[in-house]
Length: 437
Ligand code: ADP
Ligand code: ASP
Ligand code: MG
Image (cartoon, rainbow, N blue to C red; front, side):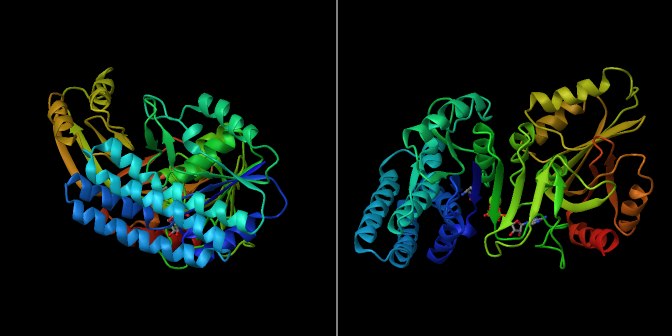
C-alpha cells in the first residue's frame, strides 16, 4: 500500500480538495495523510497567543474569522444538502470547542489541543466529501495510533502495533484518511510532531505498514536545486539519495520536514515528492540510489549562532573537546557544525536559548567569541573525496563572500559553509550560477 501526504496548499480550498479527490480515487487502496488547510495552523497559533495573553476578545475575534473561512469552504465543497448540513454541524462543534478555551487556564497543554484542530477539520471535511461523491473511505484517528515517547521521539513500536489495528477495524475501504502532524505524548496528552510535521507523520506511517512508497504532494514539482523563494530559475532534482535528501531537509529545504527521511531510509521505502498542481511532473524520487559524482542542490539554514573557544591550554589535548561538547549537552543544545585548529574550536548551534549559560561555562576553557545572525549554506551531492575538484568549484563560487566556517568530511554528501545572514541571497545565487548553469 502507498502513503500519500497532501500539504496545506494542496487542501487549501474547496477546489483544491476536489482536485485531491480526483487524484487519489484510482481504484488503488491507500492511506492519505492530510495537513491542515493552509494558514490554519498559523491562525491557531495566533488564537493561542491571545489566550495566553488572556485577551479573550482577541481570541474570539480570530476564531470567528476562521469559522467564516471554513463556512465558505463548506458552502463551495458540498452540493448535497445533507452533506452540507452534516459538515456545518461538524464545524460548529469544532469552533465551539475552540471557544471553550476562553473559560479555562491556558497552558502549553491547551495550546497543543488547539493546534490539533486544523488537521481534525481538514480530514473530517475531506472524508465527508469522499462520502458525498460515493468513494469508499474511512478516517483513521491519528490520536489513536501516533505517539511520541518521553524524549518526544516517535514511539515506533506503538505506532506499528496500533495503526494496523485501526486499519483492521475498518476493513475493505479503498481510501484511509488520517491526520498528519498530530499525536499523543507519553502522558496521553494531545501533542504534535512540530511545525511542518505532517511529512514526518507520512513517513512514520509508511514505515509502520511497510508501504511500497511514500508520496509527499505539495505545491512545487519536487526538490529544487536551490531555494526557489530566493533564487530564480531553480530546477527540480529528479533523483536523490536518502542521505542527500536528509541533508537538504535538515539544512533548510522547506519542502521536507527535517526528520521525515529517516523512517523511510531505515525501511528502504522510496519517497516521491510530487506537485498537486502538476500531477504528471516527474518530481523527485528519493531512494538508496544516487547519481555518482554530481553536485545536486544547495540549501540554507537560518538563525545560526557561531561560538569560538580559543585556548592557550592545548586545545587538542585529549579530553578537551569532550569537555566542550559536554557543556552543550548539559544545556540540551545540539551542535550543527564543528571546525577545529590547534588553538581553537568553532561550533554552530541553531537553538540559542541557553547561549548565555553555555558561554559562561565555556569561559572556563578559553576565550569565547560569539557571532549571531549567521546562516549555514549546505551544498549536497555525491562528493566522495576521490572526486577531485568539487571543493574548488564550490569554494570558487563563494570567492566574494566572507566565510566564517567550512565543513566537509562528515559525510560524502555534504559540504557546509557558515556565512553572515546578510550574504545569504548573494551566496545562494552565486552557487546556482557556478554549479547549475
Ligand atoms: P506543504 O504545505 O505542502 O507541506 P511547504 O510549504 O512545507 O508545503 O513546502 C513547499 C515549499 O517549500 C515550496 O513552495 C517552496 O517554496 C519551499 N522550498 C524551499 N526550498 C525548496 C527546495 N529546495 N525545493 C522545493 N521547494 C522548496
Ligand atoms: N499543519 C501543520 C503546520 O502547519 C503541519 C504541516 O502542515 O505539516 O505546521
Ligand atoms: Mg511542509
